[in-house]
Amino acid sequence: MLADRRISDPANLERDLLDARARAMRVTGDLDGARLLGPKLAIVNPPLWEIGHVSWFQELWCLRLRTDGSLADSILAGADALYDSAAVAHETRWDLPLPDLKATRAYGVAVLERVRERLAREPESRALQYFVRLATFHEDMHAEAFHYTRQTLGYAEPVFELHAKKYKKEDLEIAGGAFTLGARPSDGFVFDNEKWAHDVEVAPFRIARSPVTNAEFLAFVDAGGTAPRYWKKQDGAWLERRFDRWLPLAMGELVRHVNWHEAQAYCAWAKRRLPSEAEWECASSRMACGEVWEWTCSAFGPYPGFVVDPYKEYSEPWFGTHKVLRGGSFATPARLLRPTFRNFYTPERADFFAGFRTCAAAPARSAFS
Image (cartoon, rainbow, N blue to C red; front, side, top):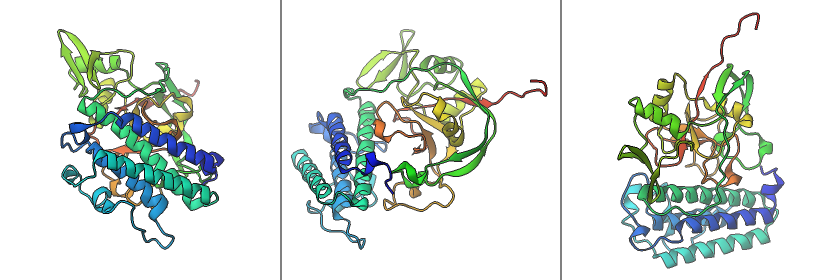
């Protein structure tokens, strides 16, 4: 289940678990007062609730789950009624009797220390290794969600070492043919929606080496297209809000905060199209990516033979209603990035760090070419 030594080694698991908490602290550490709840919006959680939820999730899977499937009690009385995201409706989370920030942080510290102690006691437990990795990636995802919540609410940008890429403006020509889509058991920890590798047929195609830039998207806007949600024109110049600051639009940077419909509209204007996720994965070894999540044209659904993993709410409830994104963003930890990883959002969402690259059919070749 966890063949990769980097993932199954307890010291590495502990290191990444601690790093995930440190990342989350860096993006939430300055939140206080009214900002711990913030406005009631459908696209964000109240930060105080979300901080507690991350620790509840870690405790649930790494400490409370018994081998017979039953649950031990939480060390925080009433935690399930507060933090179970599958049972606690989103719109109610602002009105719950949440512990204050000090108590919420103390709960997180206590859970983390108990997980570390269990790793030391049971270094060979494959089930524990799996759930520690699940909890690590879950906290990584919430740290990224806190990052884009700060953008949504206009808070200051957190300081991170970002993994920006260099891009070339040209197409790759991909020959197509049989392609193996998805993860293999030898890949170590993967989510259930990546399982398992299966053959698909991919027609020849061309795909841009680079996602679409601000300059390219601006040409579409100037031709009558819709501007991304954080752009505005002032005194004849385009500005973009980056967290709490309005800055001149950086033409060479990748466009971000674009929803799926806007990406489709750009492609129609440019006489291109979005790649399928099979095309994206097929070309991924030759592309630079990881600065913005990239929309594909593919609906989020199960691979053949799909079997739900223990965390049942991760994938299956969203099949058929979401679109697939690939690649990762500047706010995604490198340990989470891999070619087979499938992110997924509803097509109207643009609050996270979403962009796209374009694709086209391969040019027809004559019999003499």
